[in-house]
Image (cartoon, rainbow, N blue to C red; front, side, top):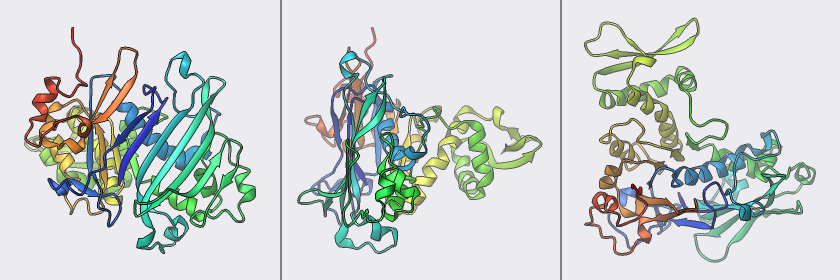
Length: 406
């Protein structure tokens, strides 16, 4: 389970921001909404996290940080061009400052053993991945530090899994052995991850870690802003099981829809919707905007639930009825749907969703008059009680992060 995120000099986040969503063992309310950070951990993290704030407050920036870290670990070696697909804060003082990102999550230290299914319970604990980037020639394109550390059972000091510095030195460990890979390390570019590079050369620990990042899915991408309709239709055409799962939900999402089916046409696969009472099936473009929005995100959510991964959904509430939103979030509480404790991280504007969340699940983003984003958990706000009407108090300005009008 992912529970901590740190961001500095990344898009609208200028100054160092830290989000810690760990839930202590003393919190007994709503246990179905929390899961152990790692098996056996007394500390837990929420299975669903929702970000609220005004337009342009930085909600998408927070989600981009998570998505960028997964992308960098998995795909940065194949990236073409010197510039990395991210931006620093846009002021003169930040032009030459480092961009820093870090995440902490539950996992196993011995990655090499885990890749062969030999990981043992005593190797479980907390992993911390740190990344530090510097601008070069006006864009971010140089890694000055990359490290993965481990804290056994979440206690004691941090132990090195691997570490890389700005002088191109890479240090491994028993959990991340580098014997026989010295020539490969020389091929690690200054704008690529050690993990992404070594994974291509059959380094088992790197392959395992890169594979883990494939379970981080979302609609925050770096080559386009969203999954386009054609990509969604192609995905459905190639995965009948997703269509079957989708059809089980559609009748509750769109009144009158009996079935979605994919047919082959001269121009490729095309979706058709069978509606109650209609003689002819409806094509994609005539289907409701809300239903199409739901179909775009459904494969991502299903993938996370099936893999025990993380679904990162920007603007979950886009064109989806407010009564459907808590239903989607609740899928992550259901042990039948979510047996591997997958997580959902979303941004949304529908404040009514607050009625269905606890304070441990709520994150706020707000931006000051100089364009700097601040992020904070509702757990950080003093005197928030279980009995509080979060929806009413948020709209009343008690927690900050509301639009200023007039």
